[in-house]
Amino acid sequence: MDELKLYTYIAVFSTFAVYFGIAWWARASSTSDFYAAGGGVGPIQNGMAIGADWMSAASFISMAGLIAFLGYGGSVFLMGWTGGYVLLAMCLAPYMRKHGKFTVPEFIGDRFYSDGARIVAIACLIIASVTYIIGQMKGVGVAFSRFLDLPYEVGLYVGMGVVFVYAVLGGMKGITYTQIAQYVVLISAYTIPAIFISLQLTGNPIPQIGLGSTLADGSGVFLLDRLDAVVTDLGFKEYTTAKLGNSLNMFAYTLSLMIGTAGLPHVIMRFFTVPSVQAARASAGYALVFIALLYTVAPAVGAMARFNLINTIEPVAGEQLEYEKRPQWFKDWEKTGLLKFEDKNGDGKIQYVADAEKNEMVTVDRDIMVLANPSIANLPNWVVALVAAGGLAAALSTAAGLLLAISSSISHDLMKSVLTPNMSEKKELLVGRITMTIAILFAGYLGLHPPGFAAGTVALAFGLAASSIFPALMMGIFSRTMSNKGAIAGMSSGIGVTMLYVFQHKGIMFIPGTSFLGDMSANWFFGISPEAFGVVGALVNFSVAFIVLKMGEPAPKEIEDMVDNFRSPHGEIKAAHDH
Image 1 (cartoon, rainbow, N blue to C red):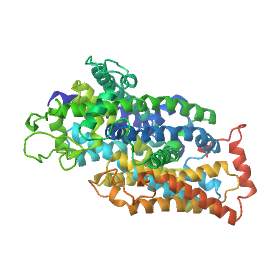
Image 2: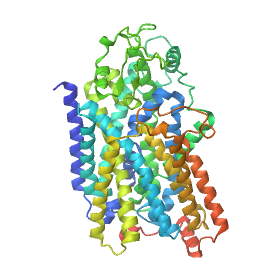
Image 3: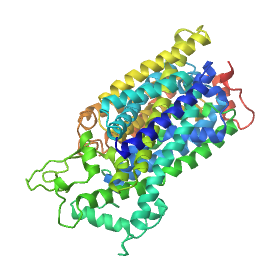
Image 4: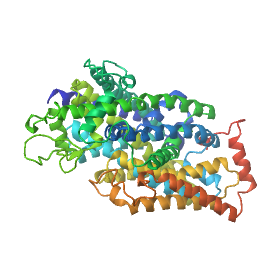
């Protein structure tokens, strides 16, 4: 066994052992533990758990890869996801925590005084969460297949097994404390290589500053200026000005990610695990700090990864690298199928240019950039192994949160609240665990047949949440009179029009091997891509809901009083965990 593989096995399986140990220690013994960790998690611990839940495979693996290839256009992910968290923390989470329910569908069912609204919310939650989880399972398979020399499928099965142990056994309690450990692993795995590479390229150990610094070669040229020159010489768009489609698409994409983020049920659920509204607000603040530690480093990681990739393949201006002399990292990633070379002109050299007819790098999967970056930069093997453990921690932590959201929506919101209200707590806990097991198996199946790559699929999930869940929550909190019929019509029309638009352009997202960006064609609605269409779906949701409200009866007086109560800054509503 070579040194890298040994380090990787140690890093990966030692972290798995920690996760298993925590799961056993924090195993759930009640529905309160299973759904909300007993409501006793402290603000700092919850902030770390939110950070891990938040920084999925898309954040850890794909976001910097997107920034590496899209340049400025990739900033929509940074702005959308971070802005959405602030929106969630300020406008939704404290009010929902004060209402004191376990889940998003439960809040919607109560606020809109309707099992119909609850069931529609469950359907929207499952559609968005299942779409989101595909990206996490893809991340697990990619990390395992590269670093442990396991087939993608086997890596996926191992990841499913790990999630099964700590999520099914521990529920929210086990997931919470496991995610605290996962946050420590993933943030270390993300920042340590970035420090090494920033020091290597610019002489500055702080990546955020290194990104705007001059190169360490004594030329006095700024890193971003050199990168702009290199990519334009190869025929690509200038790195620092490239857009994701037109300006309207950039705006819509950012806003769709932002409001989709604020409507993510698995993140909202985290605020039900703290003992009070004040603790919910505090944990939101801590989480923002923990999230910022990674998100402010991501632009540097993306830019430096692209710079190193090009310098490796094109070591001397005008002279391509001979394929037979390609570095070891190139050979390693070729084995995964995520990096492919085709000698189109028969000269035995690698030509990496923007012209698709001439570009012999026929596949450079964006998802490999963060994981390959330490190897491209010739960092020590233990750093490479740490990145593998971090990528798995990011994917597994979010997958667990999503699986719990799906499980609780079925066992608690559908079975317990609608179909079998007399179900005992013991039986509800059993149903929750069975449902989560089924959800894991289904997620694994989707991971084996992913429709695109991780961040692309995730962007679509955010759009679905933006068009359905977010408007319902906003109207539920800030409109005292919004009726059940308005909410149901709004959610149904919002997610319906978004899914219709996506399937209309399914060649962009749902055929394996097609480009994530697809063809920025005139066939799109005002140039808005399917992944950015969630904001249009949200506008449809709001519009339909208020039209239906005007045509019918407003919410009854007791519902208006309930809204006034959980919006009031005075008093505290006892958490529903205690039932």
